[in-house]
Picture 1 (cartoon, rainbow, N blue to C red):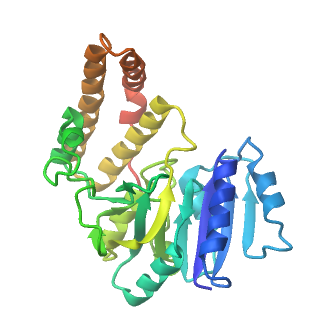
Picture 2 (picture 1 turned 60 degrees about the vertical axis):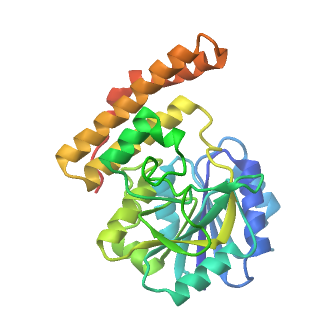
Length: 316
């Protein structure tokens, strides 16, 4: 078996069904198994999956309907322990596989064993490019540019938005520091050798942590633009302030796990600057744009909870 495809869902019933359907439609029969983990959803996801893909007719699919939410890292680790394929391939439930993308990615990995982590390219629902399939490693400079808004003003600049891949040439495969977990593939042996995801990361940051650990072990990451999927993004995290708190906490964990203490502290301080600048900017904008008042309230909520996210524990 070539691929063990893992989909972890949480209250994304319709999207998950579409994702599974696209895997069947766009992946060579007999080359994969599909391990779907429902992370204690309350929207009937597990029952819908059973009804849409009955076991008698879909032997490739194994559904794990959990009674407890293990988080993204824990659920993927659980499924990976059950995997039997040569490659473990993580696929978000809010994605749709296009044009044999997973087969393309596996074929590239077979030809290029020098890499340890493989990703593809992502597009939005309307087909426009979504450059978030991967990232470059954060630096003090890149975080400063994000904090003060330079990255937003110059989104395609390699100087002012150096973490983003928006300005990169996507016509051929290229190395990156981080592959995003929406489409993330490793050899199963390498996954287990590195211990999979660090479960101190409940949601967000686990893909960055594993990418950086893999690179340190001599397993660099690569993106293969020809392997393309639709990624809707953020479907299971509708509250923006909650999303930012989780994201900031994960960033703090990554900083403390992979940077020396002084640099990590500077990066955490820049997260606080990021938050403060947004509060001030939306405060000024609120005088002429009522929607800005809502955004300011969201960022104020993130600021008020800063003790929670700035105290992120160090990853393994």
